[in-house]
Length: 148
Image (cartoon, rainbow, N blue to C red; front, side, top):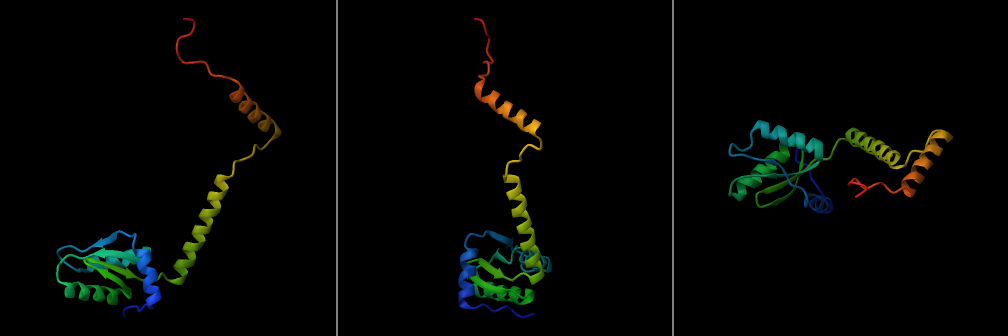
């Protein structure tokens, strides 16, 4: 697979989005193993844009690792600051459409929960009004001793 190329405007927008992210993948002392690559792939499938933290002080080694991961996973190198690397891989169109549909359904359900439910019958409506009136007009007795 080839590394995904970004325009400067796309890269700039992704840098802004990545600013608040915390590193999702932390490379250990064993370096880039197959298990780590699999975890990075899973994180990219879930989030599109991820940060990863790489150990080591050699800048050239970190850059080579960064481009190696991007090439293996068909992702784009967005940014490299110190030991933190930012990768981006867009979601497939069908996954993006599925997530948008779920988000819309969630918003509709949340809007339905926010609206207060009306009583279903006149009798229940009258009972609810009586309870509201009783609560507003009546003072509750104090829980302490009375008569002293």
